[in-house]
Each structure stands twice: as C-alpha cells, then as structure tokens.
Length: 112
Length: 113
Image (cartoon, rainbow over all chains, first blue to last red; front, side, top):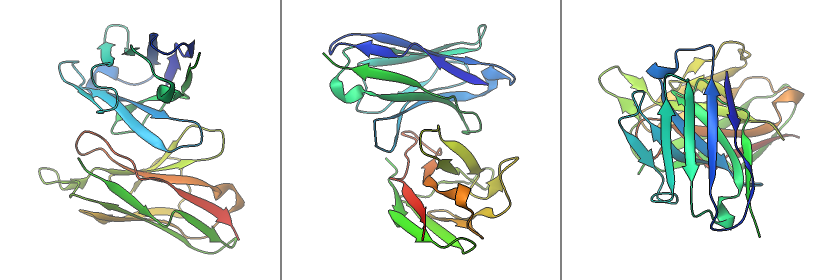
C-alpha cells in the first residue's frame, strides 16, 4: 500500500528525489513521514508533512537540505534530498501517522 | 524534543517463556483531548522493514498474534510477549508520534536463550 522509489547511488553533494506511492487507503487524510535506517543502525525519523501539505517538519540533521512534499491528486509523497552526505546513506521508508502503513524502503547510498 | 529510552538493549528468553521490553519517554505522550497515548511498537526481523505491532500503546494491529500485548500510559510503556516463539527473534522499537521529531527508542534485540 506504500511503495517507495527513487533510491540509488549518488556522490557526496549530489541530489536525489524519493517518491512514495500510496494505494488502498485514503491518502489525503493521513499525515505522512519519512524514516531512515542507516546500515546496522536503528530507526531515525527524518521528516513529516500534514495531510493537506500545509505544514512540514524536519529532523535537525536534514533541515535546510531535504524538502518533503505531497501530491494528493496522485496519492504520492516526495522527499527531495540535496547536498547529500556520506552519513545520509540509509534505507528510507515512508509511513503514515499514525504509523499504520509502512513501505518496503528504498536504499540511498552516498559515496564517491 | 521527546527522548525515547528502551530497556534492556538486548534480551535472551527461552522458548515459551515471557519476554518484556520497556520504553520510557522523557515527556508524556498522552493526548488529553482524546485520552490516547501516541506510542507504537514495531518488530523488525533481519532484512525486513519494520512491522507495526501495536499503536495507541495497547491496540494490537490486525493479524498480530495475541501473545503480543502493550501496556502503560503517559511516559512508561511495556511490550510483552507472553510465550516466546522462534519467529519472534527480532529487534523491537517503540516510537512516539505525539510531537515532532517522532522519535524512536534505540531498539531491543530479542534472542532465544
């Protein structure tokens, strides 16, 4: 019901745009989050957006570099990631709030 | 920011025995307007995405075996597995979704003794 895409290998300083396609539930009534997990590490909340898209929130570690957005007409959540760092390497998951629905994740690798 | 602290970091329990994992938040996650705790428990098996077990501190998700239960309110929460099965080997996380940043506990690794 949530499918992420857009991950891949990127050099430090580069950009990527993740997408999360939702289906089988009413997307626009849910606030949405991005959560990441670095290799061998725990879960880290990254960003969230309200159901309407009018309010956005970011972890300090990504503030000013990442931008969350959504298109409710397409049932899709996005994460634009700029100025990527090696420490951003992780599997990125999208999830609803409350966290009833989670995606399978997409791997972002930042390496030269 | 709300800090979530789980204990213990790791746990080894015999098959059929009870496993208990604790989660403490630095501030209350009880939303007074609806009297609900904004606290979730996840199971993550090796190589898999997290799976939601419990939300609202004690509401088990559909399809989750009833040996899993959640309790607590305010700042102190517990996940209990009443009779450990082999497939329960995993890392377990709590998360508060009361206020941003929606922080996670550090995880508890559960193994078979």
